[in-house]
Image (cartoon, rainbow, N blue to C red):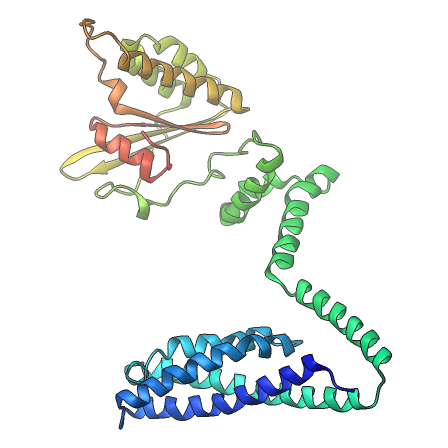
Length: 353
């Protein structure tokens, strides 16, 4: 019997093979850069258009090597014109040649498979054919699904959720232990992001586990930050309380900071300008972090919304201190230059002013 689908795929694939060989002849002409006329450029464009039209039928006939089949469009897209082919680098020319050859082999294999299908169809009756075709289509759909981007993405997400959430839930391992290992900070942050899908307030286990943009992404001119261990948590809390005292929140500010479990102080200088002081506090949970952030936001908003006839001067700290909360960690940046503090918030912590 005759299957019109197989016949169409067979005819289209054979035609595609013929055009694919012709494309190679034009490609070699372009590489040599000889006798490239406007007429040949138009022929080349028409040839590529026909190849693109036959591509879908060819892909439908494939049961494997879909990625190689997609190279048909990749090759003809990158070989824009014959003159464009002549301008390609040696490396790009060799890469296109290799991809062309891989497609050529796949076309040959596909034609052979389709020829075998046509012979097999001659030996079966209509009912057998329909049953076989239905089974084949189902198998092809399953294989395409298992090889699809969405299935792979789903599998990765499931695996990630199991590793980050499932293992912790079942009590196999405390994922936060990874956050204590400096070499595993990046994968830990990926996992932490997954955990926070279901537990938004999942705390950072340490200051070093929290992601912060590396120094290469900091505002221009600021030096590599240096850790200063001479200033402890209580000293930093008192210092920041004094800075915010003119705004009327010094005592409350300092009290919250003193409840932190971990503290880190850094300094970054700037040549011909004011550097920054970086205070990082880690709390037991997100409550203190939110409380501190709200206190500072409300204070700044209060000064911004004052009546025009209010002559009370705005304390300099309002413009010089910026705050970036991240769950249970708060980073405070202070600079004599307000623009430097704002740039730190935007560039390093991704927090708009």
